[in-house]
Length: 260
Image (tube, rainbow, N blue to C red):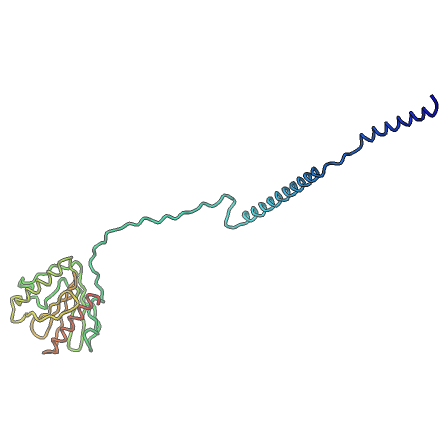
């Protein structure tokens, strides 16, 4: 073997070793599709982290608002929902009560004409009167008692006076009171020369009775339902003027009694 041969052998061996080492450290280039896939995964991970961070921050803000809200206490549970249920409607049968009587149901001074003064309370009466105790004493007229006291009011004018009372009877009794009064007055209550039944004017009430017990006085009974208004005036003018005036009084009594 010559020197040149040896040198060639060594050179070939050195090159073979260097190639072997180069194969160990050589980094192969990855495919393009794989690089894109890895980049997409990294972007998705960043978006997921950012989204979770935003949700966490939003929850923290909402929790802070709820905690600071004055309408809520320490308990963070939702308030119960209140439902409204209408109360049941109970149908009750109408109750029957006696009609109420007030001063508005009585005559006023303006109903009687010039010179008359406003009514003044003057006690109570037990039952309608016919202007004379003769009807009661003779037994010709015995009306039932009213179901409540009847206040009577007095009216005054120069040289004259009037009394009026409104009586409330039990249901069905007032028509009988008027019928019995009319029957008794037809006979004059045993004194036909003094006690007389007169013509009665039409009114807005159920019925009216005008009569005299002698002299210049006049009496009026007016019924509306279970109530009877009774009035007596001490003096009326003679003739047609007096008759017209008492008819007007009866009509005004009916209007007041019925609330018309």
